[in-house]
Image (tube, rainbow, N blue to C red; front, side, top):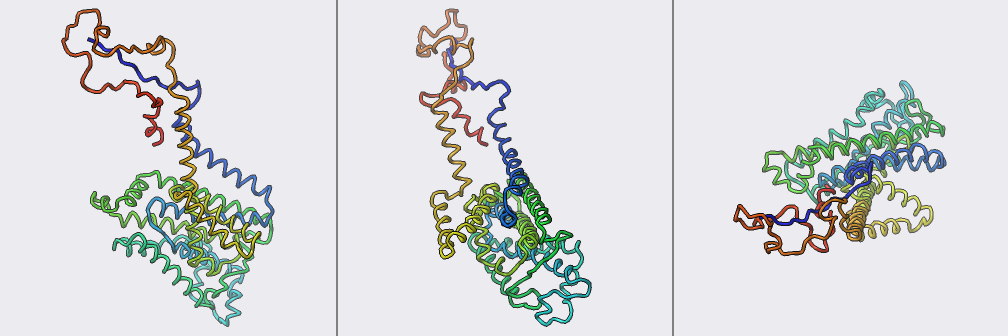
Length: 435
């Protein structure tokens, strides 16, 4: 016996149209290229030199946000001390620039004011530009590796790790303030003139520096994106969601978290090194607990589970800070706090999570409206309505004599059955399409 089985019709696409999964794969690179062209071509043409410098400053913070998104969003490490790594990279670059301006045998201006008679031994290696560039990355990464191995091996995580990193930032600021003749004290390092041949007081050279910052941000974003999609990124997410299970499988979560923490610290050091010539100063106020919290707030507002959301959140929070301070000098702190509270109440996963939820809702509503697409002409479903005769009745039996006396319907569930009434075709494949 044979039974009439209704086949589920497949959605037909227009000739030359890429499938939905391919379109989604192309959307990310297309957005990356569009934002890059906007920053490289449009922003320098429409913004004044002052506004362009502010945008360059925001992009430096966005580089730190990429590292926070990797460590916090992917690895679950709530880092409240990124200002330490930002400051290490910034001071490494600032020391070199001050020595280049002082000339051979000279002293930086703040040392002269502080009564220092000879250059400290700690400063001498930074006269070499190659050494200074290396220390921009090596110093933050070394501190992060040492801290990570000491902390993560003791299985310190969650709020305890956050408090520990915040205490490290506070101690770092106290150390900088207390060494007036070595670090500049509360004033820090200021009055930079040149940056590797670029005159920081010339708009044309400042524009070149801005383009360098854009290029570095793009490179750091691609690096973090590649790490997130690699096997290491999958292992990092597994450690975030179930550290004990990963340890049971034979992996060492402390090593995985330390690597991600070190990469995040290296990105913060690079951002600090670019912040010095872009802004023209570096003081302990840029590195303390408040500065670290503002960086974290930007990532939370944008969405810590999305690298693009982390970058957008850092730009949005810092731009809002500038606008609020210009429009309301007395209440801008309250306005900034209110913005953070509203976003966290309405979008706990940040703006990127809210956007993803909206896209999913629109896609689901579109599927409910359109329903299943009719199959092409020539198929049994197109020639007429599916037979409604109950399976197993006399009308469903072939006129030819049955050879096998087995029942007409196999007890196993039919794979090709049509979806139930009210369920649009294609909903069953939604999980596969969104993977």
